[in-house]
Length: 260
Length: 278
Image (cartoon, rainbow over all chains, first blue to last red):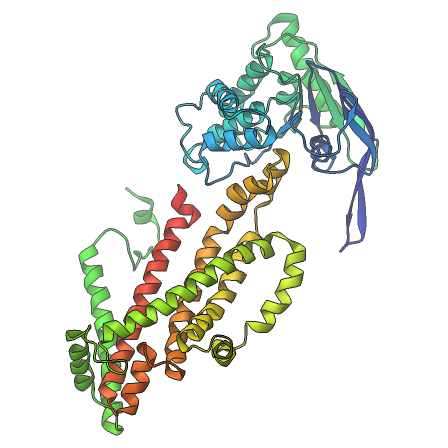
């Protein structure tokens, strides 16, 4: 269980002498088997929160615990995927995944590591392209490699920071479905996913729970919305389809965006 | 039908490169270069006529003579031009190699560590503007050997550009790569191997290229000051023997060798650039 309690974080701009209080007492619980989306307008602190969960940033107050253990820095129980892929440009896709997994899991034997790496590169359909450099593949393939890299660490929690934001709509759809398949695969060790997004459709099609974050000075958590619809949610019909659309409308309301 | 034909604005054809008329481009390149060279020779001719310097014809004839007997060896004061060049290149090579050996790790350290930067940067900035020749008497006292002192002067020459460029490269690791290193908990060795060195590599090669350029200039001066061998000594010795055609011929040879060295490093720089990865 991933638990966030009373999280506060401020950033000070020393030049303009302004302080923005981005996280103002956030509580959140992610149960094993849950897919949670953080959604909100720019500046609401959703990426900040993800970075604190990942251990890249320290909170001013409050804490993040994973299975009761406080998060104090990055660790192999959590892996991240970023919007900009963040692959190392001189390494092949294979080497990117292999070296990251090896660094995060130093106790694995080389053979074990290679097996896990191959499994996930195959799972995202990149095994044939494994020797290519990041600059030689499309954005969708690069992000698949970044997803494989995160899964190959075999983390308990996967943290995704707008992972599909830079992709075109068709590729995004495909990668969303692939991510869902991968996560729901029974042999996959990753139990929890926290994903930052600004896509309403994306949040409603993927998440079990959507946390709507608001900008200062209001409360940090505007609403927590459960999405209890069967997967896959591509073409839901009848009452389920209506519920799916209703969920999107509801989310639009929380974000104070007028419906088209 | 293309947009360019419809457009009221005439888009000029690119002047350099491009596919059409490569033969003409080559002819143009050679033509203009020839014109420049002819102008330089004309200046030389006029200058020689007005002074005691030998004319281009005398200089080029001497160049031919020097290149015709490159390897003769009649004792320490009289060697073929290739032998003198070899001696100079060897000194530059050793000094340059030592500078790379010290300068690259030092630059990586300075670039990666704020504290190392604060400690080392003032010393480097203080010593960098000092003419490398000022080190010559110091190394002469230390080694009591002209040739070794000359090598150490080259070492000092090549050290600073190598350190500073390596540090600049190592100090500008993209934010996303640092984040990858943090999230996946890269150890020191993995960080060095997969992030620090690959990112610094183009700057390292730039530093080496600059170092080599300056080292090749400085070796001539050091050898004029000191030793009984090397291309710099050859220039000075020719002057003392009132053999000005040899001096002018040497200038051309030194320039050509410098050009070749620079070209080699330019090739190296292209091969390690990030664009070369794709």
